[in-house]
Image (tube, rainbow, N blue to C red):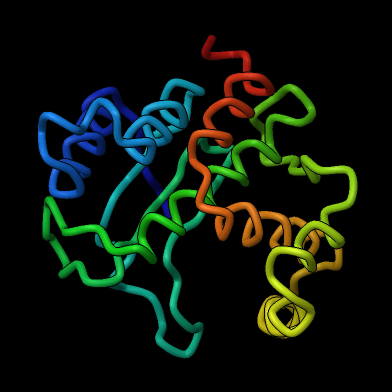
Amino acid sequence: MNFFRSAATAFASLSLLAPLVAPAQAARNPHVVLLETVQAAGVSVLINPDWCHEQDPADGDIYGFYAGGEGLMVICPEEARKGEEAPAWTEEDLDTLRHEAHHLLQDCMDGVLSHSLRPALEDPVGFASDILGEQTLINIARVYGRHGASEETIVLEFEAFAVAAMDRPDLQIQEIKRFCPQAY
C-alpha cells in the first residue's frame, strides 16, 4: 500500500475532528491536542482513507494502525462511509486514537521513528492486567496470535490497549512530548 504524506493531509486530518467538538472547545479538547501532538512528532494522520473500506472482513475489524517507518497513522472511524470527509467520532474511534498514539510513544523509546517499538512501561503485562483484567489479555493474545503476532508484539498490544482504556490523552500528550523530542 502506498500512502502519501503532506502538510495538506496533516492539516486536513485536524479538520476532520471538527465534528467531535464545538469550535469554541476545540482548543481544549484533549483528543484534538493528542492528534496535534502526534502530527507535531512528525507523523501524518489519515482519517477514513479508502483503505479502511477495502479490507477483507475475514481479517476482522481494523480500526486503525501506526506505521512508524512511514511516519503514518491511520484511523478508520467505525461508522464512516467510504469517501466521507468528516465522519462523526465515536468512543471507539477516540480509543483507537489513544491506542495508536501509544504505539507512537513505543516507537520513540529508542529515539528514532523507525517502527522499532519497545514497551514504554517497566512492567507492561502487569500494568495491562491491572487495567484490563486477565481474560481481556487472553482474548488479545488469542486474536493477535491467530494473525501471527510474536510474543513481543502481543506485549506491545497489551500495553497500548491498557493505556487507551485509561482514557487519559493528557498524560499521553506529556509522554509523547517527553520521549519524541524530534518535534519539540
